[in-house]
Length: 213
Picture 1 (cartoon, rainbow, N blue to C red):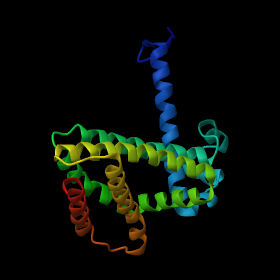
Picture 2 (cartoon, one colour):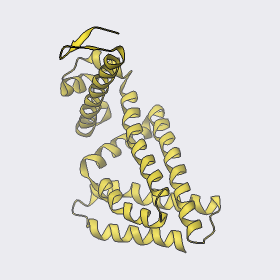
Picture 3 (cartoon, rainbow, N blue to C red):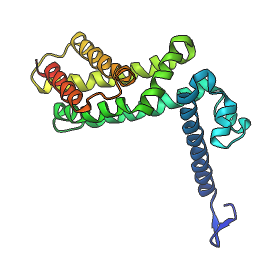
Picture 4 (cartoon, rainbow, N blue to C red):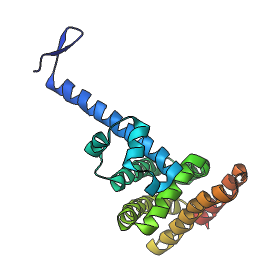
């Protein structure tokens, strides 16, 4: 046991380790938030480690302690988004009615894709993936896992609806939905006053049609 004290009580090694991990996680998240803001404002190449350092109030050396380079920062941003999407897919698969869960989640997904800050960041990462093989592999790897999870969700929804669910059928459906949601990023840029409510209704109709037809 270590005898660092908090409030007069000895702090165990486990408590110290937990505290250190929490502090490290908080600093890591602080760096990611600053990096996201810099990527949106300056682009990937304009967002130097020096700019990120200034934005988060840490030295460049401190940032390198957590992330080897900017590609590693992007990998962490993509991983965080992927974890959230995988959790959402798992939640839908565990619902009593998978189709209803899919339909209910559409509104959240459309709103999120059209949120200007998030859209700008995703577009910047996609643009860098078109130029940078390392970032491309990060993005493609996340996409493979995300589409596989969504495919399983669609498969269960189709089976519950009494429809066929061959791998080829499911793959086509997933690509249609992925293209629709990815397209929202560009629509946000090209049409600032886009009607979100109408889009949600349209997306819900398409998903219901894909699952039940």
